[in-house]
Length: 423
Figure 1 (spheres, rainbow, N blue to C red):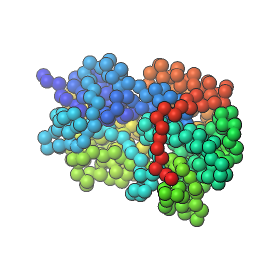
Figure 2: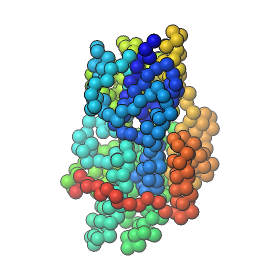
Figure 3: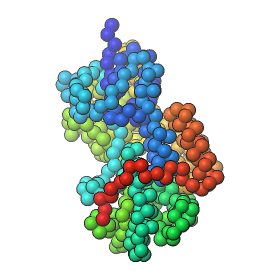
Figure 4: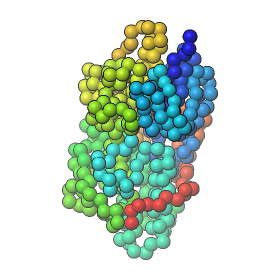
């Protein structure tokens, strides 16, 4: 009997979990991804702030897949899907499938503002993180050669838009650079001229967590020197003069705006618009099947499921959802092969966390809410364990130890200069 062919588009948290649990299964699997590595996104802000090198959070997909006899990998970008003929059109040609799994993940949501999209920095990929790292270091070098105090302030104004975990962690990392790296490495600069702003449109940061965690996180940020502006939205941006206009009437002059204010599903051409729901995500049933198609599955950030009674408005776009959906789909595909009934997906929330800086973090697991030292050590341990590959765990652990004892960021290199679109 010929093995059914599954094509998996995207190998992030969802796609990787799926193929790991279909290893040595009766299926033949082809994985498509435009990158040849798995990217551990929760630690990308540390690459952006110079705490880690890119190779510490990336792991070669071929090294993972080489141990899976029924799985092949192609470094390619899927451009569209022909649903009638069961064909995925890619940058390297057409690939046919018996079953298709879409796990393309998410992209930054600029809410239709093309100016912000063109001129703000984002943190959704390793190249993005390296661009931010270069930009930060270049701004410091530029400030050293400037004599006008007002221009120096503008150069050293760093604005993060979005008070979710990524925004909070990035703001905390920049504040620690101000407090520890500038006094040591840029002695001619006055650290007080550097300002870090965190802008959040809702009433509190980390709005997906409890109020006590939000309050504590804001307190930690302010203690580090971050200017936290809640109930404040970006109304417009003038990139020619580096002026960011806010809903509270103030204007921030800056050359660096990092946008972490939202995400949306990364869809693919060829699937009808009526199958796309809120957040630019595909409508799926309780088994993660695309509505109306028994042979097409969608998992991870790009899936919008309302059948889970605890999440009638769709699941949060986080790694734990993606991983659990990948595991559940692998189980269902095996049940499908052996003509067994499918199991509906139910998300088990293992908790949430965010780190703000040294000894400063918030962690929630069920009714347990922890802040400070214990949460910080818990955050580090969990992230170390979730990293793919023993080498990556060792590299990250050694870098963290170095940073802890020296108060320095390990990777402060401008390897690839970044050309800002803000003047």
